[in-house]
Structure formats: structure tokens, C-alpha cells
Image 1: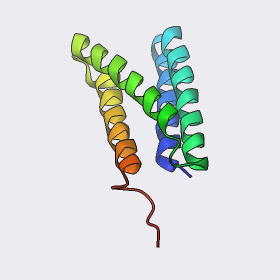
Image 2: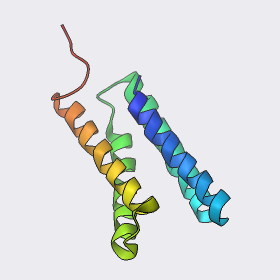
Image 3: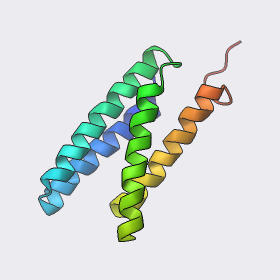
Image 4: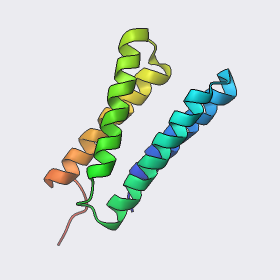
Length: 107
């Protein structure tokens, strides 16, 4: 099971809900739930078949790009910078697993 993938999806979804709660931002809620759901689907797919990482990688890359752009323009660490860093970490994790450098050991 792709526990880090599901945790990442949960954090993105929770961030959208928190943005709505704190600032009343409906776009934040919608984006958080849409991206969180897509990331959860990607984590589900990689849980079933670790080589099926394309959807998760694409969604994570889009989120990293959008939040990186927002961080570049605003200079605010929360939430844009933090989500961008977390997304880049997930991209590196997916790349490591896809290349066989990291992941479950096979005996």
C-alpha cells in the first residue's frame, strides 16, 4: 500500500478544507479536493501495481508547477511554498521507485 501517497493526498485535501475554513476560499476548497482526490486515485493505482505511477506523477508535477508559480509570485511559504516542496519530494520518491533505486526489497 502506498501510505506516503495517501498521506500526501490527505494533506492536499485538508489544506483545501483549511483554506476554505480560514479564508472562505471556495477555489482553495475545490482545488484541494480535486487534487487530493486525484492524488488518492494515483496512490490507489500504485498500491495495486507499483509500475503504474504515471497518473500520480502527472498530478504531482502539475501541483508542483502551480504551487511553485504561486510561491514565486507571492513569496509566501504557506501554503504555496510548502506544497511545492512536498510535491517535489513526492516526485523524487516516485522517480526513485520507478528507477528501482528505492522501494520494497525483493528477495
